[in-house]
Length: 338
Image (cartoon, rainbow, N blue to C red; front, side, top):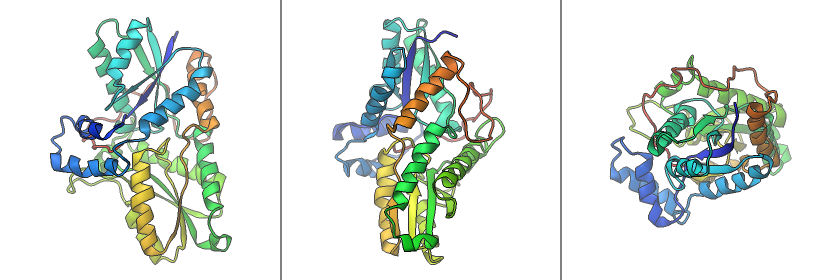
């Protein structure tokens, strides 16, 4: 297959206060979420001046990746400008015929993988018959270029804690919670999202601090309370750890590739406040962002398709270039904050 462009696929976020409510309405379009709920979430954005960092992070990643791709690079979002529909139209006008798409999510599941395929299909239908094809690059939860930066970040975080507290220090890995029914149907055989996250957590733990205990917990839950979501929530888990005599925690947000709003609000604000109230030492490890290893990983994923580069992997879960048919059916789409 010949590919003549690269496109970064992301979630999108507001870049000024007037963007916040229109952005949130885009996020929950068609789901009947009450305006009062959106106003509550909007306060998180206003805490940061009405600006989500995710768009600037995408610009930085694209600028870092582009020079080594050997093809023109584009960027399109699901929920805010630049919208993917507009990006695909520009690609058509530039003569692009078949692009490779990199989504800013490492894992399988509806919101983290299949919905990006749906974004592509919707954008191509909007543009019409001459819309370029877009092939999404594979999931990368166990790629050394993703795992390595998380390992280094956990090691750096641990170095800030008292050395004599090491025996009572815990590593807590976090990812976005999703409805339990959605998790059970993730991937062709179910539970792919949670299986991949557990494998990533085990790999980061082994590389960073194999002598410490670790847990995988969840953050950023939304949606009606009667729908069960993955638990425990990170704040609830911190309370349990404090009761068990844990003195210090390192929070590693392995579910994310950059320090966007859900990391900053849910972990640096809410979870940090919970830890402080419990007397826990607390430090949050960084995400990959534009770490050179992560940038190289993106280029290597492209080269797997364009030059037959062997897959670089640290895990053992099955992996494929194109998702099998019937993967990750839509049960309920969780509203996402960022």
